Amino acid sequence: MTIGIERKSETAFQSRLRSLDEEVLARLNGKSRPAIVPEGRSIIIEGDTAASVYRLCSGLVSIFKLLPDGRRQITGFLYPGSFIGVTFNMRNLYGYTAETITPCALDVWSRPVLEQLLDAEPTLRHLFLAEIADELTAAQDRMLMLARRSAEERVAAFLLGMARRQAPGRKVTADIVAIPMRWADIADYLGITAETVSRTLSAFRDRDIVRTGARAEIEILDRAELEAIEAGCGTGMTR
Amino acid sequence: MTIGIERKSETAFQSRLRSLDEEVLARLNGKSRPAIVPEGRSIIIEGDTAASVYRLCSGLVSIFKLLPDGRRQITGFLYPGSFIGVTFNMRNLYGYTAETITPCALDVWSRPVLEQLLDAEPTLRHLFLAEIADELTAAQDRMLMLARRSAEERVAAFLLGMARRQAPGRKVTADIVAIPMRWADIADYLGITAETVSRTLSAFRDRDIVRTGARAEIEILDRAELEAIEAGCGTGMTR
DNA sequence: CGGGACGTTGACGCCCGTCAAGACATGTGG
DNA sequence: CCACATGTCTTGACGGGCGTCAACGTCCCG
Image (cartoon, each protein chain N blue to C red):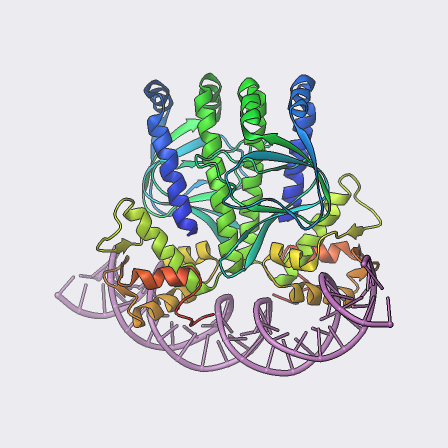
């Protein structure tokens, strides 16, 4: 559910972006500089002064916060089209760390340049406002998830979210979902442990809900059951 | 911590609001209509079309989301000065329910009127952008809290947050904290149960960290210890 | 082929949710 | 002013979900 909403908001955002005045968009792109980052690298680090804003062109990025003792919470996965490092608060500090999960291509703007663009083109600021508002909604959904849902519900929601993201249009699909991130990442995203992710998926496999085929791929066999579990009424099993 | 950050953002916002052009502020206030709401009433309901925007003048409000089976997550407590029902996404629906915890006084704007004000005065939109960005930061902090922290850490963080909120300037205080909400509310805010809130506070009392005096009041005796617990290193006791 | 990273599975235990009974405060009507 | 009802907080007993630790299997890449 959470993921669904994130997906939806990003989609909405991109359609808005696409509907932007071509000239504005061109100006936005014209001022950027490209960058390639290999996997497992930090793009920005929480607490650093926000010198640049990035846009993800290809690849997968996680954004997270850390506790002093190393506990980690991934607050979101970013897909192509998302902005990274947008901050509008007074102290110009990044509020989270962003790390590449796969190799990534980025567009980079220096903060002053982007500010200038924003001032010249109010539509752009409008756009960021809508984008951030959507992110806030998604964050509130995730709070509900992290605080109140069982491990089974979280994994079910995650799988369905990934499936929806990959097949935006279709309703009936082969339902083979690519999972590019490691399970420790999924765990840190869902607020559980990697072992629990593994165990839950094994249980789904034993119940013929999913089939785990090639590495980094999961086939959804019984989407209805997954959706029932996501909604919190999994065949009456786990409350 | 989370609460600390929420407090900080609200303070920053209000200082920004105060620094606003007097004329703009006057126009904002001039278009509003006042309202009084008794305790325990809904102001807005998740999923309703967003017809109005509210500003809290006095009282305490909780905003929350519900799961179909009744599980509830309070995503935030709102204090005077906060806006309620601001949405900038396409579908103009409220993203959460807001309910009064104490009797409240509100300013109300109809959506079209506020939109009109926003268009006439770009500074205002700027302001909302900063406000929402701060809320997003706070939401991400709360994710970390809800997903990763122990019950003890959560309650300690909550108490310290309430204390900081009540004594914004001072460092050393009598440290008597007023707690206007019921413990079921605290529990739904922290992602635990009311029983766990009670038990944790009792444990703090037994360890001479707090003293529980008059109803709805808690005195902090050992703030350093509370801060150690909040940071996740509570005297080596609970990991 | 060997090493390292990642995923799987099991054993164990603890934190915290659940259920339930009692204490306490507040309000209401007689 | 007191009996009673109601809502809230407290405390205990109990159990389960999931974290932790550890061993093993599997895949990949040098």
